[in-house]
Amino acid sequence: MAYGMYHYIAETWEKPYEGDHGKLMKERLIEWRNDPAVVRVEKPLRLNRARQIGYKAKQGFVVVRVRVRKGGQRKLRPRSGRRPKRMGVEGYTLAKSLQQVAEEKAQRTYPNLVVLGSYYLAEDGQHKWFEVIMVDPNAPTIKLDPQLKWVITSASAKGRPFRGLTEAGKRSRGLLSGRGLRGTHIHKWKKKAKERAKGLRHEASRGARLIVPHEKSEENK
Image (cartoon, rainbow, N blue to C red; front, side, top):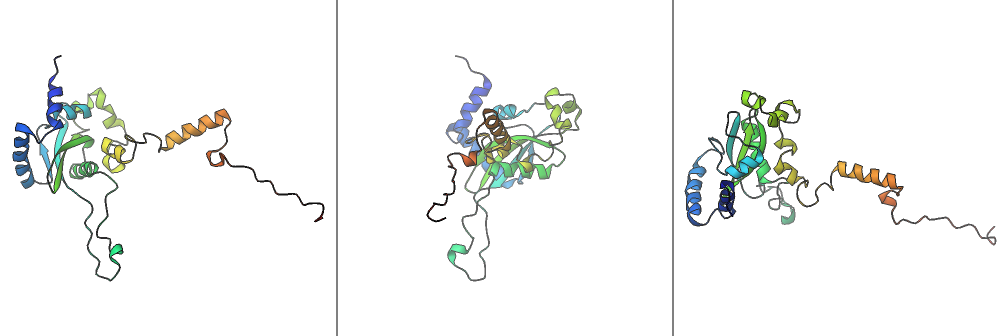
């Protein structure tokens, strides 16, 4: 069976640190460590993932490589006395993924662009690198593209990473993996509508029994 180009690109990135590609990645990491945290690049490194997000090789698309520090938050050790348990130096982790943090960095650097999505590139002992695909809503080629019409017309297009509207943000909110839509208000509305249609009781009263006060006996009257 013959496979296309994107199949072999994806196959290479399944184990990016092995073979000839691994040697190339080590050379790239040496260069990337000396670059700024947010760097604009000419074209995406993982073309298959970029195309899945919506990248097209034409004017209006911007590809940014972002470096993010790995690990949890660094807290200063408090000067006042307290128990080691309450020092608050260790055990602090972000509630959002580092990929979402990378998208927020790219959005702050380019506030006039719209973030479509991002994907993982590489990592070492201290940092992780992600590529962020962005779109210029004012570019004529983007305005004429019917698939990207929402970038111009939608009021929620700008600042998408800060509100968890990208794929990485939705995954951090539990909307893509695990629970799916069980934790959202839309799912609860639909669930309540089904219960009302079937005449079921409220979920809080399921299994609850009605407690009737005991009538006074004739002897105590």
